[in-house]
Amino acid sequence: MKVAIIGSGYVGLVAGTCFAELGHQVVCVDNDERKVTALKGGAIPIYEPGLEDLVKSNVAAGRLDFTEDLGLALEGTDAAFIAVGTPPRVTDGHADMKYVYAVAHAIAEKASGDLVVVDKSTVPVGTGDEVERILRTTGGNFRFSVVSNPEFLREGVAIDDFLKPDRIVIGSEDDWAKAVISRVYGVDGFKGVPVLQTSRRSAELLKYASNAFLAMKITFINEVADLCEAVGGDIRDVANGIGLDSRIGRKFLNAGPGYGGSCFPKDTLAISKTARDYRVQLRTVEAVIQVNENRKRAMALRVLDACNGVVRGKTIAILGLAFKADTDDMRDSPAIPLVQALQDFGAHIRAYDPQAMTNAGKILTDVEFCKDAYDAATGADAVVTVTEWTEFKEMNLPRLRQVMRSPLLIDFRNLYSVDDVKNDGFEYWSIGRRTETEPTLSQSLAAE
Ligand code: NAD
Image (tube, rainbow, N blue to C red; front, side, top):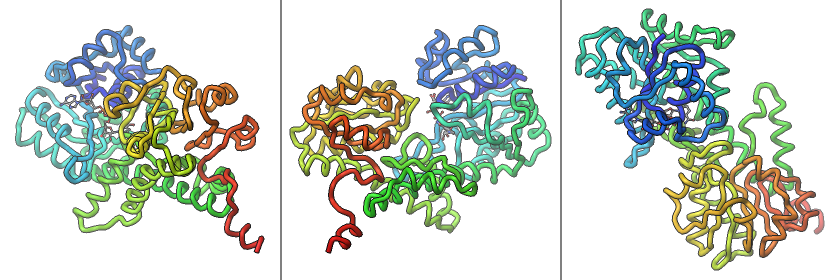
């Protein structure tokens, strides 16, 4: 089938490339001229493992192309997927729909034949109705239908997630549109994947509800980690014990510096705003947002505590800037408030990330970006691991200690064994594990 993907970012480029890999004829559209030029020249504007090779092979096979020209991309197309951003609006945090609606207007003007318009962006309930209204009133003379088909891929493992999803959701009440999208997903590559047919509104809502639930899981385990520190438990044992319960599952139970990224922060905000617009209050989600925001900035206080209350004039090495491993995405990364707060407290920051330094350089100022972890740690009074990159897990700790001014390791991802790190001569602070010396309340009581 002929498919157009409008918006060639983390989702659009992966979706388009994977559809091509599965045998469809795909044109990826973007209005960022530099992005399209780069893609046409074989350069991939984002870091996503495996994507470059897959793009190359599908371009070579003649199944994948890139353009800025929407009209051209829509010629003879069966389905046009909207995959543009839906960032939080600066004024009130609600999803900013201007990119989606701009695409709807552009489709209305440029499309000529029958077309199923598929919303793959994460959008508030009712967006499909509004896209439909725009198409109807801006008025091209063609048959159309609007479907919601939310995307659940995770950056870093996006190709695998797209090609082997837990489910495919098709939100539509129109038999013709359902048949077209079922054919897009009806290829052999998706055989065995559960397909959930829902109303358009249910599809829109379930994507937000899904992300809100995952954000809640992370926030829950982060709070339990705080409790572990207070009572002397080990959060990894607690998380394993909880996670072995098949009703709960182990995923998204790794305590850390708070969730970030391009989805959870904005999607939790958007679902809570939507709920209030409908006179419903999602108190659990609102609490999650608040707790997570506080946590991200509070990470700097942990560094301050580990540095005996003073970081002014000290050099802190930050290892990892991206919001998670295997991506260059800096959107809402916990590293941002951490670095900024430490700078506010007077620290000098040296930082290293395997992929995200270019994007970080657009957001952070006065940071010395370094060539690797050891370079960042050279002369540092403390090293802080913020992103769980494998190369940090596999670091040579004695070598790291050697280049540091003082051997203080603050680990926000629980990458190391407490005993190993201590044997290597570090003072070690981590999350949800009691690694310093002050007694717990129960130990103090026992000693009385
Ligand atoms: P992104 O910012 O990486 O990509 C959006 C792209 O759309 C950009 O390349 C931009 O230039 C392009 N664009 C904007 N307006 C356009 C227009 N009028 N015409 C053509 N192109 C246009 O965003 P993303 O991370 O890919 O997210 C896209 C959507 O998918 C969002 O709603 C997001 O919530 C959702 N989503 C993202 C992820 C993820 O992990 N990133 C996962 C699932 C769902």
